[in-house]
Length: 438
Image 1 (cartoon, helix red, strand yellow):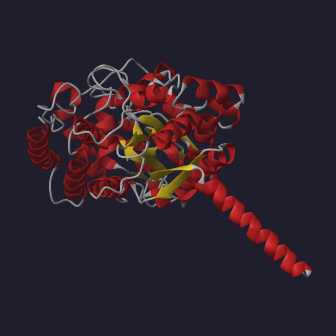
Image 2 (cartoon, one colour):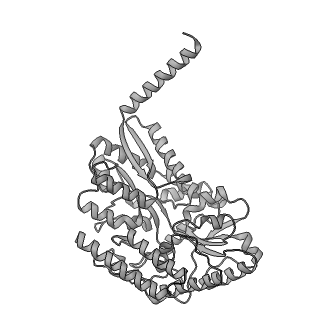
């Protein structure tokens, strides 16, 4: 046999051995919504875990954005083809809990108990864990990626305009005018507008979004975000749009490019953009700071609330596969993994141990202000108005809020009319959810 054939035979034998080895492993399907750089890290976690496991194989599959991933998982479950693990964003929590009541969900606390793993949920940050527990404080899904909106700023542009980093909404408005005068095309913008400008604005100022403790207390909740404070806030931004100091850039993270290319100098969106900004922004110095305070509404901020997602386990698979899920969950929750995730993405370290590792490694010295999100979330003990939200059908309700806000930005409606409509339309979906799950 010549050398070429020898190498070919050896390669074939290696592939065959590898395939046989993989076939002996219990396989777990993990559907996630992390694209780009975030997806690369998720793939790394799965690959690292697989390399160290003799019995388990985690297949991480990107299924589109949060809404697309959740919709795909629900459709797959109805067809009996569900993955073992699905990543669901925080506003899908009530929907997943309702699915759990119908037997679709394998709660994480029970998964860990059944696998014999000593799992201490008190290791997680209180602002994170409280969002995903039931009334008996049992953890239903595994916290994975948690963030909160912050104010991103272009320091070079602010210096050129002769203004300091704003800390209040009055200062944001004044800074935006100075930035416009200095040549910044779209001084102020934001993404995930319901999350940043209604949900977190309300929590930051300790204002309820709805009754029944923002939906935590019962399904009979109704929205109240058409209150004077929120309406005045939305109208302020709309008025900024009239003089070009605010330019709407779309839902989700659509306006990210405006900030990266320098068109926008003040941008409110997730702390999780840090990793991408560090990679992509080369032409100016950027920073992040806490959300602005509306001094007409509160004397001091309360706390912000999380975004991001958790990992839900779906019923319908074999016991050895669930043992692998539990083992993988223990792996990704480890302090070193979570510190790596936090430092390379901007998501908060969801455990105290991961936060401590990041401090010990000097991360907050070399990368200043990257603990802004942690400070915001833990600024004060959460109140019923600031611990989060648990509204049924909120994925669809956010679409309604987006539609109504876009009508404000385009000048078709004033803020009061739009917020009244959003509350009325949203309450109709809350009643549908209540009827289906009561």
